[in-house]
Length: 270
Image 1: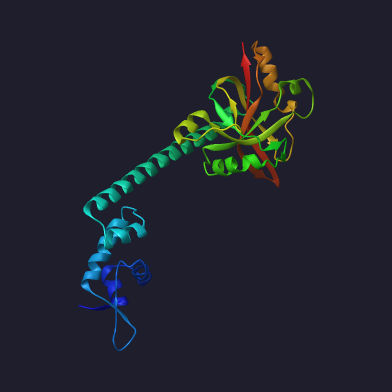
Image 2: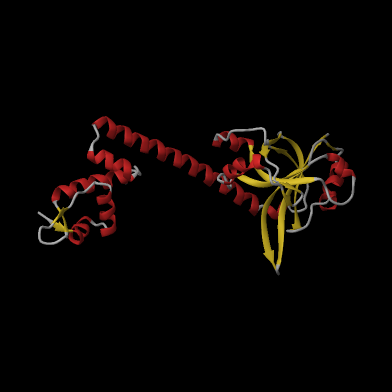
């Protein structure tokens, strides 16, 4: 039996546009009427279309589906379904990692009130970072472009981080020598299989005095912003033994002012 495009689409529960797409990929081959230029589909077209929709339901690309419909031995069908299985497993793995990361971020933000201007001694994990600014001024480094593009695709596993360039600047009042850049925890680098190169700095795991402060969005980071943490280190008999680093948690806007919540970590030894 022959069906017009509208009838055929309605019977199979699809749109006429979807049917035209499958026709474009040579999955269905309508006949043209002798007296007009209308296209007519038959029952065998329905079988091909339903088989195609079955393959597509497993997220097999349409181009591959067309090949399976038109010419593919059983082994090719089995291999294609297995490839779809592996792809879905990887998507589930990445989605599970993303959910875990979002849960971790949400948990940290819920506890923000307890961390604000409160010093804690914590074991911090290792992390990799790239320097993209000198203070707040963007650097134009051609060698960083590919890494930056790749790491932007890894958000929210990557995050915006700062690091002081040398501990000597801590002895001076005013602005610090520091730079901003994307960062990635070492454990996430392993999970995501991210390759490491010479453009990346490594911050090893270690004991830090950690706190959260609030700074104006456009302000430079100064020693006075976290002097209370240095005072705490002295009270605890700790010595600063590395570059200070941290990350942006988030930025809020209130009363026409942007304020950034910033986690500060000061490596110490006792």
